[in-house]
Image 1 (spheres, one colour):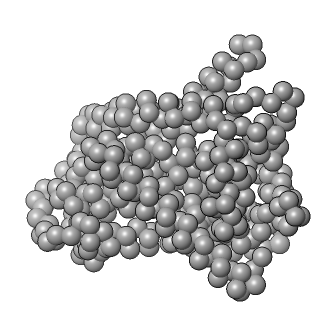
Image 2 (image 1 turned 90 degrees about the vertical axis):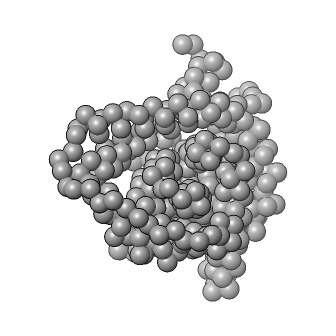
Length: 360
C-alpha cells in the first residue's frame, strides 16, 4: 500500500494492536493444555487440596492456587481459570488480585529499566537477578495481602469448607484436552479481540493526530493528543519523578505493558529495528534530561517506575475479560481504581524514602 494514514492505521493500529493481544494465545493454549492434563489425570483436585491450608491463611480457597499460578504467564487465562471456583466470593477475590502476579508482559519493561539502573559491564549478574526477584516477590506479596484485605472487608463471609471428590488417577484423553484448549482459545479471541481492536485504533489515533508536517517521530508524539494528555497528567505523576514523556508511555502501555518499551523508543528517537536495540535505548534513557538539565531516568526513577508497573493495572485486555467474567463494569473499574491508587501511593513512598536515603 502507498504511505498514508490508512496504511499506518492497518499496520500500527489494527495489526500491532490485535497482534499485541494474540501474541499471548500460545501461552494461553500451553497453560490450558497442562491444566487439561492435570484435570484429566485427576491431579488438579489433589493440588487444590494440598494448597487449601496455605491459601486459607489469606482467605482464599485452595482452588485459587491454579488461576494465580497461571497469572504469572498472563492474567487473562488466570482469570478465565477461576471458573473452577464454586464460591462466588473466593472467585471474585481471586479475579481482583490475579493481575498483581508478575505476568510476562511486564518483563520487557523490567529488563529495560534494570539495564538502565545496573549496566552489565559494571554490576554482577546476581544483582540484576536479585532485583528481578524483588519485583516478583513484591507482586506476589501484594496479591496475597489484598486477597486477605478483600476477604476481610468487601467480600466478608464464612470461609466454606472445601469438599472435593478425589478421582482416581488415570491416563488423560488427548481429545478432551484438545477440545478444552480450543474452547478457551475461542473464548479468549471472541471476548478480548473485538474490544481490544477498537481501543488499539483509538490509541493509534491519539499518538498520530494532529499531524505535524516534517516533524520527527519524537516531535510528532510530543504534539499528538497522547502527548498533550501526557503533559496534562504531568502534575499528577511528577511527584513520582516522572515527566510527560514517561506519561505518554504509561498511556500507550494500556494496550499492552510491553508497549512502554516501543513508546520510549519512539519518543527518544531510537530505531527499534536495529540489531541489539536495547543498548541504544538504554543509552537514550540515561541521556534524557528534565528542562533544567537534571537526569530523567535516575536509578531511583527507574526503580520507582518498575514498582508502578508491579501494582498498576496497565492492561486493557484484562479489564475487558474481568468485565466479561463478572458481568458488570463495577468490578473492573474498582480493580483499576484500587491498583492505580496503590501504585501511586507506593511509588510516592518509595521515592520519598529514596530521597531521604540520598538516592538521586
